[in-house]
Length: 385
Image (cartoon, rainbow, N blue to C red; front, side, top):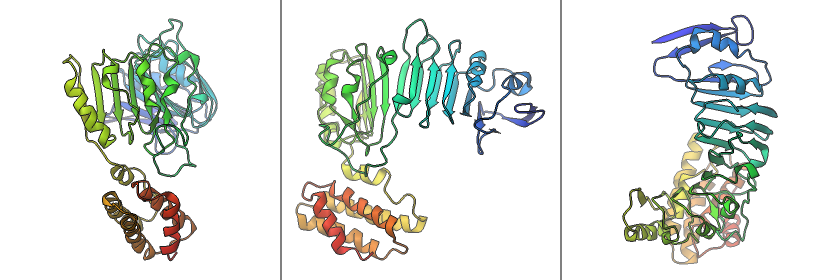
């Protein structure tokens, strides 16, 4: 069943809200949203309350892309709203002090977002998308800190390769705001091929009990000092330095999924030797570097579909071959096979040449028998573009 309601969102009868059976959320923002508004446009949020469209605790989730701080006041007034998502188009101050939200999602887009959080008695999780420096966090007067999820922006200067987990070639250290250092539950989400998150950044969080990490990490040994009850890793290409699970006697929940193949096997054995508990522990879907290379953001994503498909298939074949290679010569054969296909691709200009060079560097990262300089020389020797 579909219902339509006229609302005076930015003027008399300016918008139409469409409610569909089974759809519990509403998006407000640029083209593609349910209700289209300009990012800097002043919105009559009360118009939604005055309309039948938002009766009976609908919507349960709202996404707003803009800079109107009144969004926070409106969201705070709606007790049926469980999730609010704010994507900044300008510097904004948001006051959710009196909100009864369970989930709050904030994306900075390089703008400064100052936010007053509601009580952690209601708010289960606040998600911050962007560098933490772009957020100014104010806790509720009760001082309790909700769960925090940090989505880290990619470093556009870094190619698609895994940096060492010892941080010797760079690691991303985050200075968490003092207001968040009392967190017990944190999730850090990065990219497997980004600058690794320096886990020592969490050392100031003395109450830390539950940690989830996705993407590249460095200095996992620092987790040994925390008294963890839950630890989760997903899409982590290198778990080197992870302390033995016996470091956390109270560890009830342990999940390792789509991570470093060797470490996954090792952890599976450690889990079997742990005393039985009431929680859940699992280490599965171990992955080698070739899997990460072919599954995550190959540099051909912006190419025409047909050309990208040919390059992707050739790369996958070369990745499999170089993973089996035992000599430098076999590594060169794998790269030559990839470049033989690349040489026949149409429309290879400067940008595409750089993408193919990056792909060859990724292949070099999959083997111990070939360094990146040698791979670069081979690339220049074999390519015809």
